[in-house]
Image (cartoon, rainbow, N blue to C red; front, side):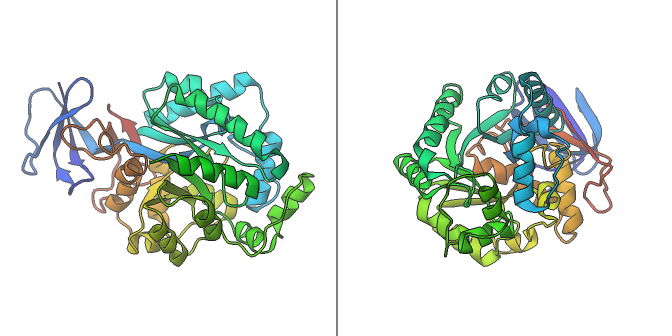
Length: 394
């Protein structure tokens, strides 16, 4: 049995508990939450920390297999330039890729993450995941604008899907990359697959750039030139929008994670929220600022009752996999939003989106959410600062 006390416990499912104590068994299951009437009382075998204790973080969007691209050099602005840089610099030695994945998973673990929604184009992350204590939902990502190779692309993705499913049968999904990077033929194949599966989760990049809207509406713009310069055979779309693509091909029964939403309007997202049985918007603030120098209006999304979760994206577009770092960026850009709200996004909302909220996301008796200490906390304003550090306790 272990007991952890701090200046405040943030259970997420209720208000902060001043001088609270969390009691767990040796496997991390929460046995009891002790309220000490605002005055800490010495209780046998209690470790008391200066700071606040929160549940483990849920990283709702990551690309661990791109970890070797940390410090990516991007020559052109915007999403098309970023995709070009990733494509040109993605190749590396297996040794470098493997070590970078290992280091990234370790960084996520030590900084308090307990679960990761990870985008996979190959099985390169699988050996490291099997050795990790983190929970992973593996999204096997499909993309390809060339209709001539749609069946081959799907077949490759299916092979990766089956490889992960051997080890993660309940947390592996096939998913489209984005609204703009698939041919109609590939979309149709994926749609058929998803219609045959019940209760599957998809994670799709959505509304990340204005280039996405331009390409779908007119078949022109930076994405068109990116595909054209790559000598890829494709049929340019016209008269479409990201929302039209989504509702045309994704069954409304799937649990949908729409990632980024940087340029998506609130009205557009509310319409999609009505379409899907379950919809979560995933914000990756540092990545959005790096790629498009913009951040989605998260305050408006929250005010309109939309579910929000937080991801880091890959190390190609973020400086670290620390979820606290992403939280701080959001708090800095939206000072009217309080820490408890953003903490909810970083914990229980992500857990619900991945169907793991019975175990993770809140500090409640019977759960094993992991416990994270945030040190150097600003108790006057009840929020962390850029000097704050998140450390895993269990």
